[in-house]
Length: 215
Image 1 (cartoon, rainbow, N blue to C red):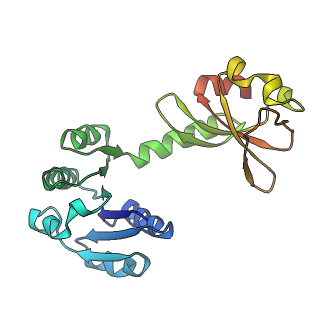
Image 2 (cartoon, rainbow, N blue to C red):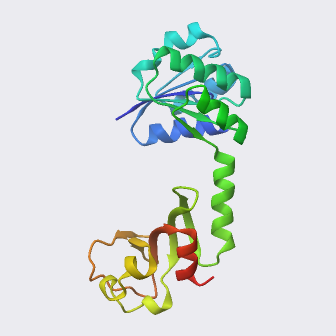
């Protein structure tokens, strides 16, 4: 179990806190909006109300006791102030939500260890998924690489990983298979035989994935 402090109970912060709790973590969610906190408090470990742009309120939380601190407030200036104070107070891992690319740059300069930009990331993932009819799910790993769920290429069916020498000739890594019941099974053997009625989970660059999916 890990401990999380989530500052800001908007849409992103609330969903983040709830899901972290569902995964067995201990979460404190804080926000200055009493109505939102009262509405969501029964779904998370604990919640508090206050203005956390104030240093004294952040100090009272003992921010350096948490494994991760998420700054999910919507205001540009408020989030910068909070990140700056958290860094001064010794918070170990600060992850902040950005609303624009310039916001992202300032958050990193102010001391955030990592910045998430949900709207951009979701839009990019959706664009990747729907621009190629053979891609069903996508997880972005970097600007040019990701993990893709794709249809098994027709010329792979009936052949094994070792027969195809996938890494050498296609420059992708096959991670798992997914059957028609959505059951995902890790592929650990080079003798694995691909079938037509499955999807496969592969890791690689966008250009290499495009080649094997033949969009």
